[in-house]
Length: 387
Image 1 (cartoon, rainbow, N blue to C red):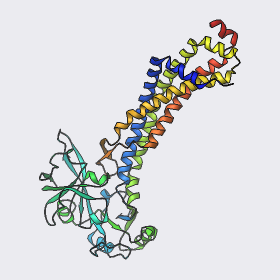
Image 2 (cartoon, rainbow, N blue to C red):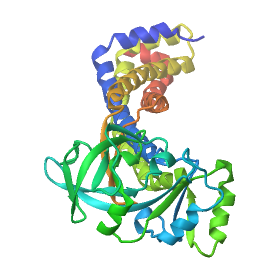
Image 3 (cartoon, one colour):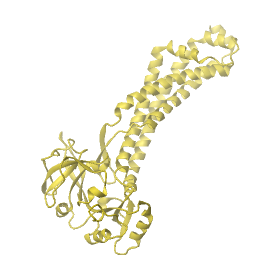
Image 4 (cartoon, one colour):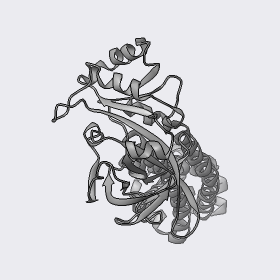
């Protein structure tokens, strides 16, 4: 014979203060847990969204980032003539050789940070379909003009249209802002290759990105480039190249989420234990009546355990609600591979909310088990005397 669930609901409602206090403690743990994972999800989404599966990114053999790569003009020209490269609407191959350097920008409130300055050619906006000018205009060839990713605007000084940014011993006029679908490109400055080259590293590109005619033929493309003795390059699917850069920091953030939330969860579990032990002690007469009426000890255990899960569920729901406003908030961190700052948004997704709710129920299960077992294992005579 099972104890009706409505009995447990009423019991929880009779202790509003202790129930709410315990639930809020669990909600705080769930909030921190979801926030850390949302931070990790946002950073990974920014980098994985940077590359396309249709594109190939080429760097010097052995280079694990664009920053340490170097590709000559001659190599870039050979790559542009490969038959597996798609053509654009103008008939020109969709190839974008690019300069990649770090520049230091000042923050409005003081301090500075490293930001990627990327040299491009006109085909860059066709190679990467998710790039669009959202304010101002595109740079004019042969001029000291730049366009700035929207994540930089306002977070660094002199990034508004018409402002002049100083780096590379030159002044550069901001003529436009661009969006890139929330990817890491939005944390970059783009200018013309022929202007960036003499200002930075000279006659050398750091990478070459091109669109494949057949995206499914990547392995044959990679092998063809590896076998060409003139090139000495490594080819990566662009999406995978940038996704790999997010791996280390993502793992650290995931570990921090579990570690920090785990420590906080210990306190929340003790709160649940105390609440349930107090409930067991205060309801000795009820337990005696239940056992006398023939309810089995396992039913009593299940009943008290269900109460703990109800409290945990309330805490989990509150924690999820507290976490929802974090979604879309933009923050930034350092990409440890490129050493540049990357802006990204918290991503509170439905699966994270579900994970937070499960985490809360796990805390309730652990915190309610021992008090529930104590209630179920008490002898009827002893409980009756306490009553």
